[in-house]
Image 1 (cartoon, rainbow, N blue to C red):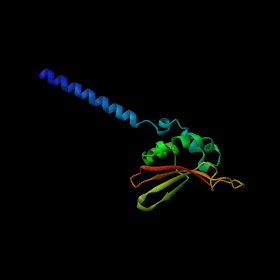
Image 2: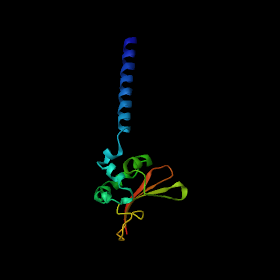
Image 3: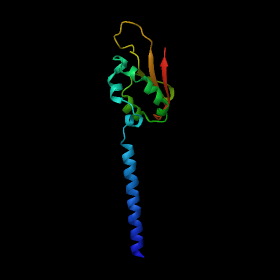
Image 4: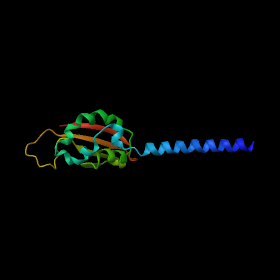
Length: 134
């Protein structure tokens, strides 16, 4: 009887450790691998000045709806620091990433403005992800 109880406890411990390991393994995955997105290239092209983000515009359109529900730290892992950050009422914020060269780029001609925006609620959860073109 005692041996059976010890065996059940050992099995339960093993199961719990396996579950914990799986959770930790999943938590350590990077955001860019979740979306098959070239995060490093995106982050290198600050304000879209180099034109590297324009090459990724199709991919960002493809994954934008999958970003809804993610936490702010995952967005920063995936896209890096925003080019602009707009603070809204009730502690909401919008991250703005320029795809076409933004206003801080030294380009001669006024080109079409294209930006990717991510709106987060007060808890840091993504509520909207939009591509804006002017």
